[in-house]
Image (cartoon, rainbow, N blue to C red; front, side, top):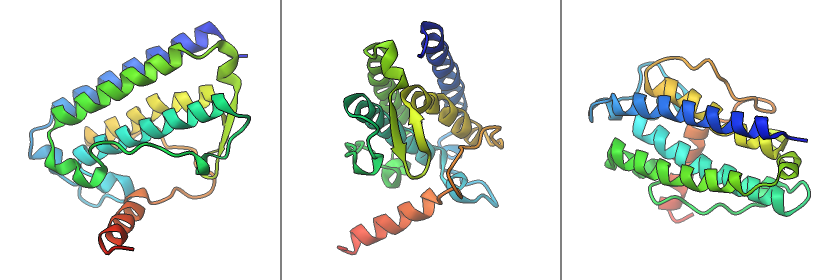
Length: 188
């Protein structure tokens, strides 16, 4: 069973990685926030603003997945509805770093409240994703600080030392997103 110490460590790491992400984002000028790194691929092709929107969307998704795991035995996360964020990735470049950080701050406050409301045995419940496999609630929650570390490095212009552990090959989320938006705009 998860321990009080593991939950405290989770929250400490979440705070530490989020602080680094915020510092990296706030160090950017408005022009730098819109820069796409040369020779980048996949998510690294997103601007800093798009990466912040992606983090917001994924935090909302992870929260939904955790709630699903707490509510039923090993849910299939493909069936879990996730409420869309107010500024999706494709609209992020029309906003400021501060707007995106404020939104991330509000979402994180919700996440921390969610964590505080979980009984220790709840951290051992599981949920299954076709991309990540079956993870415990604690493992899903650890994704928050790892994801912040990954994108914080990218925003700062560095290669991240963290790579997500996908089942199979990493999906090209940027390409999938572009295709989904084009399909939506075409009325399909």
